[in-house]
Image (tube, rainbow, N blue to C red):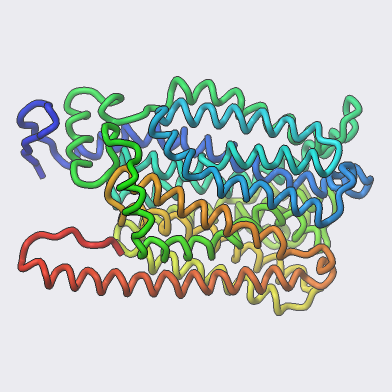
Length: 493
């Protein structure tokens, strides 16, 4: 198909492009933006969640983080929670600064900061120091994920975002898998140069973020009109003439803020994201502890956190991977959860059905937690398999959910604020309950409180997505009826 268009942004008066031209422009954007964004989030998630590994690393010799910082169970959980409080407080200002200071500069600054702070965690001596450093980590990491989602709206149309959010978020599942494997390796460095292995874990994992920040500053493109040239620039701008954020728009006015804050339908999105954030945070922080409760010990428990993120399938030795911990079989682990995320997100955008896709995956995740909760405490194989199913469902329903929100917010300022509020209420406040639901005293009985809570929250997500889907369907019918045959912008489903 060939398209002729007249542009109104002081470009060549008339340009022509085909579907192949548009695909070429998107591919040029994808091959630079998506690997960089996914790499940034990979490092962020690794530095955020490694405290779960450090908590039990070398616990058999009392060289784990909780023991050496003389922290009680409650004190350690407070340190986890304080990160989320800072995360919730600084989402909105961080997204405003991303627009004001340019994405590449702001994201690079955040990267260098959280890398340095992560290394600082390796030096804490008590629970107060750990809590203070975790608060600072929450401050600087708060702006990363909502910032990346906001950043994509400058480059892609609404029906192109979910799959790209999935590609970025998939790096979190990889970070979860690599985190356990890295912790297993670093665990053998215990007492090297007089430092416990958990201290080396923070020091070593903080360095890549600091170094990568330099590359992000110089390599990450800010806006299509500045990065692309000639016809590619014209095509990119035309594609986003109606939808998508604009670099020349004001960051935020009081009118924009008020309109977004009183747009009550958006709070439905925020509540749904709150629901998914509880299992997301609890899996992020407690997977090492959960696997430890399945009969795996110390470094073995670190290694067994890998399959829930990179699910094993399709090999003759799959049962061995699920139920034993021989390191030699890990060469057979194949990334499945990541593939599920991407396929689900592509399908959600392609069929304009983000709500139902998120609802279906949340329901699958809920079933995983429900079955795990009712299985006997000593049914390690069944409960471990359920953990894998639950992780796949919980992680895979998130990208369509975020794509759905950004597709139904239209102005540049509103998108930045809505995404920040969504992640603030959801990933900030919503993750706080996830810190407390996996109780240490329930280790021998199977962590029933955590599993039941996560199942309930995912069922809430399922019901919320379906309800919002019917609400938008009703609104679309009403808009079509009242339009009098004129073209009208409908809500994405």
